[in-house]
Image 1 (tube, each protein chain N blue to C red):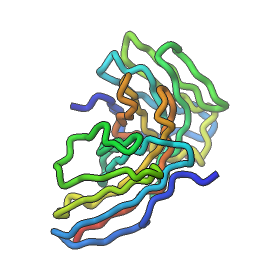
Image 2: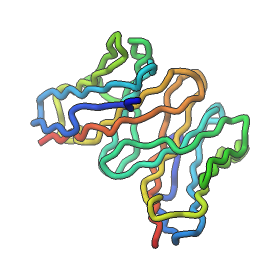
Image 3: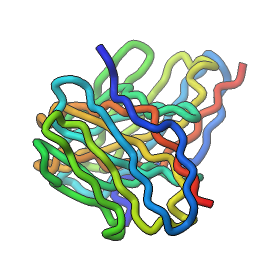
Image 4: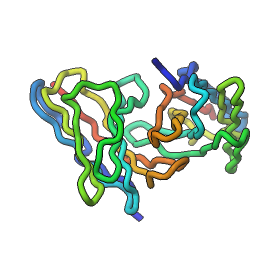
Length: 113
Length: 112
């Protein structure tokens, strides 16, 4: 069974541009989570989608947005990129049921120059 | 406000000995806790979890202990192996939100 897949693996953008990151959850999983791991920091919660709707977002500016598609895959969009947005962006999926673990993809390394 | 805290950024242990990684949380309503292991350039891998109705959960070399009164959980790895060298994150799931709040991680180095 395929795990959570993210694309691209690496992404280099210039300041002010937009970045789009993609995530395909494990088959059967309806919840998708996005996390940011900046250098030397822990996993910061960005967004949670379930059944196509945004359920919760972390303490990030509105230029971080996303969506979940009918097939439960998800996109994370980062507009007006800043140098500080350089980080590893991790996507995770779960069944959406209570007290279950989330499974992570390998991440997208975004570098803003 | 960091709701899940891992106060030790790093830990070194000799191969074969016990590794104890600690995690504290502030919200007594958290009811599900998880540990993840992360290697460089990879996504976190789920290790073990525990529900707040338990105080211990064991899976092979990994045991998680939960002390609800102290709002503290720990991960014990026995015996430690060089392949266990990684960053370990604890996470908590607030009831009803189905999201996961992570600590800042502890880098474990197991010395051969």
